[in-house]
Image (cartoon, rainbow, N blue to C red; front, side):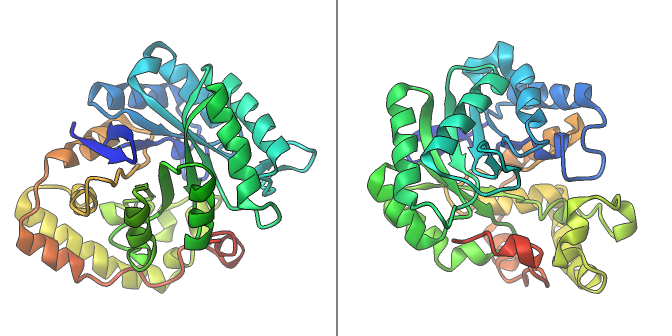
Length: 325
């Protein structure tokens, strides 16, 4: 597989998001053996960027990834995230990026992952009550100690990114980006290129929607996180199927799957972008990795560029208040 360059960190240009193996989506946690096989198969295919977080589970996803990569540690770039678990007593789903919590978080993640260093350590959500300079200062200490190799931010706004980067070089920024979520093109991507920071789009398949396999909410369990997202609301979902159908039409013309078209479009946006499609199945990771070989003609890229993004917000109101800070 070809490579992407996130600042000075070289990674496979398609990564693997491990979240759905343990949490949030229909079927999560139902087959850990298949999840481990999926990670192993990804590495065999040249996928080396494996993304997890302490909040996934919580904690169990890091443990799963740790077991899966233990014998292949030098072949992978392990990325995990902190800041949505407070270790001072408030627990999961509490935003906390105080220096003390950064320290507690990294020690827990290192133990669960069974490793002596985290290759890419993201702040999962910006803590409005802790200056970003304090958080990044604590992360910089961890880099000096060798416990963290590179620092990242997730769902940070432009001003926060500039302030953070002034304290310590930021290697990568995560946010949602795909054919149905084009918001980063307005401010974020130009800023990252100005500062020479890499971009790691999560949900590059529109939380599975762009694969064309989700046609109804009836296909999702009641506790599936996607049922809370306005883009999946009845009415919005049906309208958004028009986008999916157009991607499927293009896929049929170029002998690829809709998911591969969505990923190939993202890869065509630049060599500093490394999407992390999530899956818990070997067959899906094989399909996603094969997108590396899909070369889209200019006419197809232009047609994809003109597609209308999804209707509806990308998060419910409470979660939306935590992004782009």
